Image 1 (tube, rainbow, N blue to C red):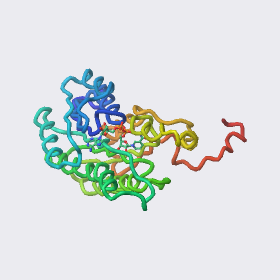
Image 2: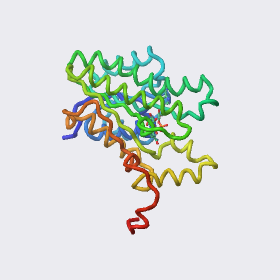
Image 3: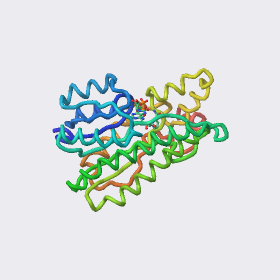
Length: 264
Ligand SMILES: NC(=O)c1ccc[n+]([C@@H]2O[C@H](COP(=O)([O-])OP(=O)(O)OC[C@H]3O[C@@H](n4cnc5c(N)ncnc54)[C@H](O)[C@@H]3O)[C@@H](O)[C@H]2O)c1
């Protein structure tokens, strides 16, 4: 029996990266997935999800568009019976030094990452309130827990996601709804590659890898495994938490002393 047997999950960002890996892992564990993504064509992970859980489907839409989000949640409930789990994985990179950030670019990043998360929560909550049951997992970042050079809009949006999660957890706990946040380290997805594959990032890329105690970027399915725990009934006494799935990035600063101690 799967860890999400019979559950229905609404997953944003389901066409790629962490979202599609989540869809695949959820389907393997017995859930049916209503995917939502601005890109209506899912990657190999999404296709594997549909193969494992045939009722699963992907809706094309923008998380910033409240009408589309509302209708897509309604469509998922109508087709699949209800939404037990919501995962907010749609997101974009973006930022830069504040004095150079265009106002529209700030809005784009904050609106997709933070407002989009708010809108999906807003529209899955009524059904969860009716059933007095639900699990919401939001994807923030280690960059929502601490600063990073040039982070600005991205870090502000992800810090907002972390605190929104804590407030949601408090407001809805007595209604049987749990809300938790996953804070990934640097994960090898198309989003990360667009930043890291820039020529000027080659040295920085190695330094960032090194800052993860495990010495590498993470894989999308490693984040999906954390999301699975929060989403499942195994986390029945866990709400309002952040889990950093980050290869030890948040454990502390790394200067190379382990090498001097013969531990690398
Ligand atoms: N990859 C990393 O290193 C990393 C680290 C920390 C946090 N995250 C977060 O994880 C989440 C998933 O990112 P990923 O790395 O899998 O990236 P990704 O680019 O592979 O996937 C993101 C998905 O979100 C979708 N999306 C973007 N804007 C959208 C919109 N307006 N409406 C609906 N869908 C939209 C994209 O089409 C894409 O399919 C994001 O919130 C990201 O900020 C990623």
